[in-house]
Image 1 (cartoon, rainbow, N blue to C red):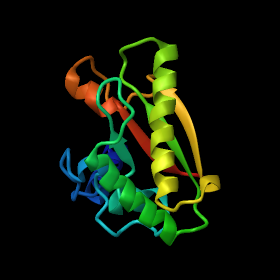
Image 2 (cartoon, rainbow, N blue to C red):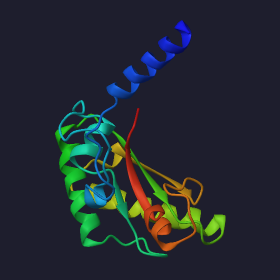
Image 3 (spheres, rainbow, N blue to C red):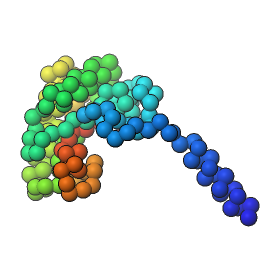
Amino acid sequence: MFKKLLCLTAALVLVSACDTLGTSEGEGGAGGGAGGVAAGAARPGTQEDMVVNVGDRVFFNLDQSDLSSEAQATLDRQAAWLKKYPSTKVTVEGHCDERGTREYNLALGERRATAVKNYLVAAGVATARVSTISYGKERPAVVGSNEAAWAQNRRSVTVVAQ
């Protein structure tokens, strides 16, 4: 009986410690959000800081690697953030939805990552601070075979290098 009471108490403590200020889906626009992290709460210069205060991802149309005006706005914020933290390096990941061959999607993901890198470099970020990698369709953000899932998977994500 004591073990059950202890387990129940531990579970209640864990649940009560959870953050209840999570963001609703879609908040943060193209920049994405970190559910449960209040704006400005992340340690400066970290991935969490970028996600919360700037946005770490941009989205693409089907079979496209050109940047929308919304994507450019997010990348402008990323460039300003990177200038604020000049020793920070990032990797830009290119991703695709599940449609198409593995080879096609790897090439498309590379074009997407390169488009983001080129934009950041043109905005004044040193080329040596930005690397790229394509994951093609291998790392979906959302599992599903519908337009809503595909739209979330056609993206690039800027990741602070460790």
